[in-house]
Image (cartoon, rainbow, N blue to C red):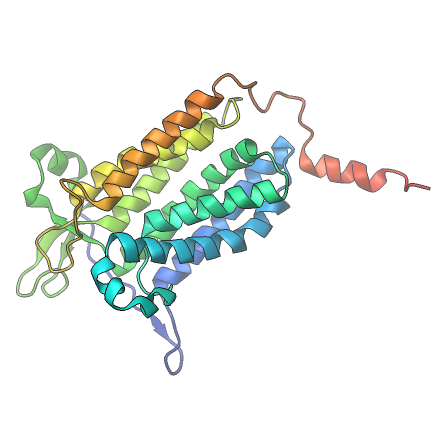
Length: 293
């Protein structure tokens, strides 16, 4: 069991404050970009492309994350208050954000005439690490309180009960404490597991698109089961589409998309194949090349 703690915002002046959630999300973007650069350069890919990409995927994640929250979780509210759709900082859906990041990255690579599959493979490694760090922001403020451990199957209690948190009275329920899972922590672990699988796969040459397909499969399967740990007994319970949450349905779509990517690209030549020139050597060679007359 993990002891309960909560990191409050650091008040500056007036309405300005440093939010721990925002700090960790920003750190996730930064560290994820560093991971991408680390994997890109030895494979002959321009690592600076990821430094340019980070601003665009941050904006895409914010806008699409808010739209995903509005359309799939709170449509009754936003349909009556459409102007609040422009408050992109107020209410975010992780899957909406991931979709936004993916669409923006695809458009960015196409516009720069970069290899979408190869750059996409590296992007998945950085994205998974970014999810691991960014989701810790949800954990430290406990904005995704989960189901009570006693309401889960015995095998879940045995295998994952050590991840539960003893929420004191007034934090989850008034009048009593409760041992519950925390959705932010579970999703952070999901990001870490996905990152570990991708790092393992990246140790050997694979066909382009391998990591791009594997990432949504691993993440989607974990997310599907993680959502069973969402609470249904509190006022903030998520809506369901039939038996599943919107995120669970999107997880199924992710698995199908990832599987399709693997099947479509499985016969491509493996990469890296040993002929790639590391990016720093390419830059050094260009700097030594004689200027054109």
